[in-house]
Amino acid sequence: MRLRNVPGSREMLAASSYCFETPGELKGRWQKEFGNQNPVYIEIGMGKGKFITRLAASHPQINYIGIEKYSSVLVRALEKLEAQPLPNLRLIRMEAENLPDIFAPGEVTGIYLNFSDPWPKDRHTKRRLTSVPFLTLYWQILKPEGLVEFKTDNRPLFDFSLESVEEAGWKLLSHTFDLHRSPMAEGNVMTEYEEKFSALGNPICKLIAMRP
Image 1 (cartoon, rainbow, N blue to C red):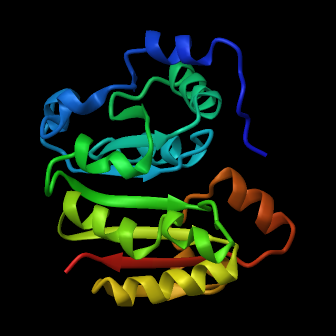
Image 2: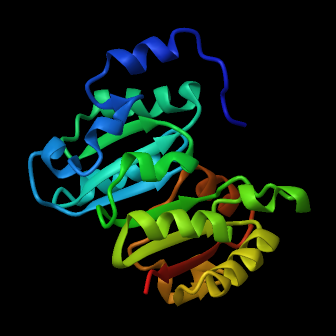
């Protein structure tokens, strides 16, 4: 269960040079913020940050930005980052709907979506991070041929996501209904939820889609 109320979390985030709550002034300038010309990858709904922290530590040639809307969750990622400083990782507290206000067209090379909220009720389909409206937002900030990688243990959400990719006009590069038993497992970085659900025997689904 996600933490929603850690006393002082907003103040901790505001005091950190790794975290931004009003990052609009960096739109189109993220590489300057990192001090290099390396590609920028983002994770939307990063949770406590295990996945993106591992990626940033393993790939210093890539700039990573973790996005999370809950302060009390994001502060856990910040604690990891302050314990293991990584110059190629930044954190943002924001809603995913505001991505075009934060990133310029073509500024992002890849987007990770891991174990996103399934929003199971039909009236909430547009809130799913793999819905056509969100894929349209990602299109705006991704480079041509930029990638979206999505993992979940929720099969109905995954089936919905496969349909959304096709409907939005994206190219589905690869997908699997059982990641850890497929060739796509090579180089896979586990998230907190992935470790938990895999231990329960739940198969993990993954897709990679490319912006034409």
